[in-house]
Image (cartoon, rainbow, N blue to C red; front, side):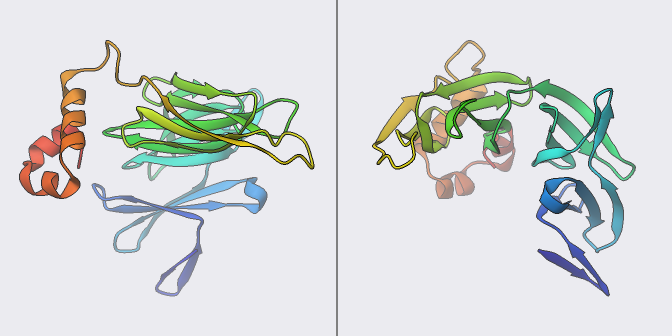
Length: 231
């Protein structure tokens, strides 16, 4: 994709908005994703910053494998050393707010449920090039909150809107030339059913289960929707 502003053309792969600070963030991946560059603009089109996304420690220089937008100027960055960083992108550089470790993933996704964000990863068997697990991490704590693992290949999966159910299709196509059988499953995740669940979370579930989006948009006060995290 390209952004045209006056006489300049900016190439980018991902675009993110920060409406509170009135900014646009453009992410550009280098060749084979061997580098990443973040550019920031205000809503008038003025360039605020441009810098490489990288970190350095005793093991060398690390580049991002995945970048997901949390909110505002805060992003989730997956580094090549398997560390996840919650980072704030400012005019002067990238500030790391928190970090946590994850297993070696093949695919990443950032999922929103109410006012929280979860990192969803898929991993593969070490001896076969097949995806066989789905794992969900709470990025505010870095803790693994749900894991599904099978001896077969995960062909498709999807969480429902409140993360309480996981639909998954697994297949036995582990060997070349073998016609696979597919098995659909719907699983209960058990999320939001422990001692950490509070009254606000149950109120959100009750509103979203019993009323549609149109009714909630027209009948709930804005302050209540903001409190419940269902804007």
